[in-house]
Image: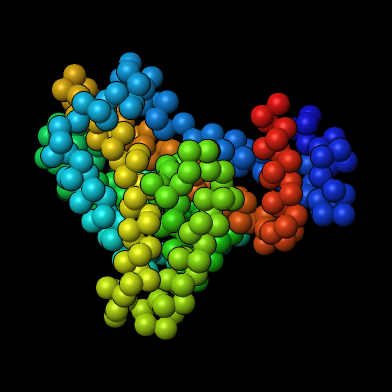
Length: 286
């Protein structure tokens, strides 16, 4: 909180950021920390005592095709869920807190199953885990005031699964939150327009297939790291549960950061929030 007040006068143009108060700047600072410094790989490395890249390299060749197929299946299921069965009720005022711990417990249970049976269970475990995580992401979005009756917001929930992992289309530099968000914004907008007009009657439409492919490509980075850790025989069911808890916590953190930014944008305008976000990001790099 001590840094928030001078930031307004020194780093952010007063005409653009004057409406962001100290409490909101602190919320935005936490969002920057979450979104610019995702820690899933580092946390898995600490858990298993080895760099996660090395673990992925130890996976058998067949595992990569299995992971790719399971990831596409999971994202496809998440997309259908987001547009059909998510709870879109607006909570009563004061009852907006998200149920993060409940969802963590549920994915720990699916992770125990995955840890006990290894890669052969991934095709079953990953869609279950992803479905639970999507419900958690939607719960977080709702807690930040997002309207889940809007198909675009529900697709934003699915898009969170693409956060924290680069795709093959990215260059070698680190891709920040806004750059990654803008890279998929047109896809999400086009998919939302398609769904508003056609629902899921044309589920194989190129705009939906393209969105699933783009999200799955990024999501597979974390899935590969998760699968590599759970594949280690020494971890077993307990280790699998722990890895899945870390996996879920990562995406809950991404969701919290993303939907805090979106809430502040609704209140103060996208440009004001972006200027403040980038100033905070620079400050945190010093």
